[in-house]
Amino acid sequence: MASGLSGGNFAWRASWRVAVFLLLMFGVPLVLYTLDRFAGNVDVSLAEAIRLTTGTIVGSFLYLLFALALVFPCLQRVAMLGLPRLLGLLVPLLILLDFPFFVAGDAPTPFGSSIGWPSGTVPIYLITAFGLIAAMALAHPILLPLRPVQRWLGAAALGIAIIVVLEFGFVVGIASWMASIVANLPDDEAPPAAFVPLLIASGWVPWSTPLLCVALLGLATWWGVASRRMERPAV
Image 1 (cartoon, one colour):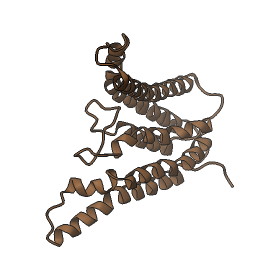
Image 2 (cartoon, rainbow, N blue to C red):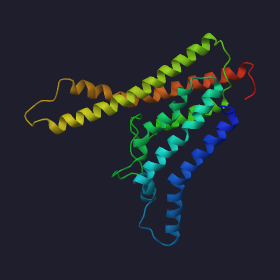
Image 3 (cartoon, rainbow, N blue to C red):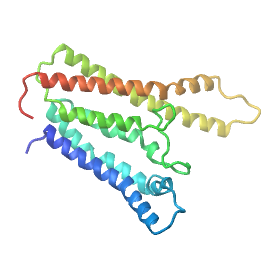
Image 4 (cartoon, one colour):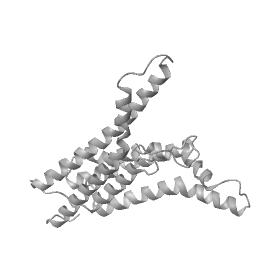
């Protein structure tokens, strides 16, 4: 049995996983909301209906299962493309970075907040993951030795992906550290000198992340287009 997936098979496996996730996360609440309306109950709003999943542990489990369900297909696809298998973990990892967006908690809105977007209202990591899935499905396997432009594209895309993940970790780490400092800081004591500079630095992450994600998708698309222009074995 082949250790990789063709572009068509990968697109199919990824697509039905996405469809099932969307159906369970949003389709079921919308159906219940519609039935509730037909029954004459107007007390529940659409936002409250969606919070049936996003505002409860059900949505958390669905989102985690969705990310995990994409691990194996992505690993198989990057193997077929001739790339290091660990790169297949990038898509599920990006999806997990938007976990806070799909966990509304006690928020009055149906969704939480995305760390990678200035207003927190756009799941930029999830969108980037979907774009990478499309690029992986369209790309053709690489041929060795790599051309210089392929090396440059691969190195640049990998570097940007690492920066995106590190920025997320930086914001989460700084937020946790600041919360612990504020909780334990005596009323008459000033916060550490690094408090304000780190707070300002973390504030730039939501502005730089969308640009980095666009660059990452652009490089991945460029790679895919370049691979299809070369003579390749059938995929």
